[in-house]
Image (cartoon, rainbow, N blue to C red; front, side, top):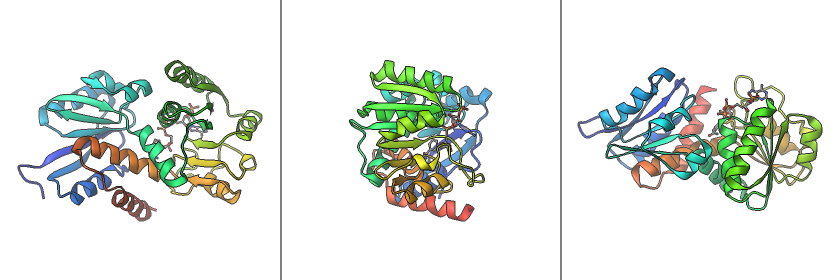
Length: 288
Ligand code: NAP
């Protein structure tokens, strides 16, 4: 129930129509009996600065930021934490008595899902990442900061992969190489990889039958394969990988954990992760 005491939290993005964050965060507020609500706002690029000023003006408790604003929003904040600054993107804002502090919970959410679903710790491991966009960037920084031994980044546009590799190497000293999505390069990198992360929209609903970026013949038992795509929860890549004896991790875990970490930053309370996951899975089933 909305009362005079309700604290409002929000999502800023464009589009926001299909976001699962509102159901997930409202469920978490309800679980703790908090007088809070979470609403999505479609914010156009040219309105972002005004929208951020409204966080202070309206006394919003906090905000999630999604495509296409995660990078631009940094210039409107009072403070940005170290990991978000390194990644160059913010997905969570805390309004601390009018002081706006930016965080990035995507990378930490990804690591938590890897640990929970595949018992995977990145330290000393060899990693291959497919894609070099916002998701790949958060994941690659999280893995490098967590002590991954090597990162090999492949992207349709190899220059973008090289730019990410350069940023990663300068910031973390990690052994990073980048290249185009070529089968010979992928084959060599996957031969010694412990983890493969797919971070492009290929295979996402409604294009769920699209061929994966990597030939499944290159996947072998022992490899952990993680797809950031969460709709469908089990992509064609994950099905092919599981059939070849790989351990597989879908994108729902990262989505839920990044939201849970945002909830904890805003409230200081432990997020009800299992309940948040259940409501996300239910929403995906209902939309299918
Ligand atoms: P983004 O910033 O737009 O980057 C898209 C990446 O995918 C780029 O590297 C792009 O390559 C590549 N790509 C796009 N279409 C491609 C195609 N047809 N063939 C080959 N490469 C292609 O997007 P993003 O935010 O990183 O998101 C990527 C995916 O991860 C989306 O499905 C998103 O839903 C998912 N994601 C999930 C979570 C989660 O919480 N589970 C979090 C973040 C992202 P170019 O550079 O060559 O264009």
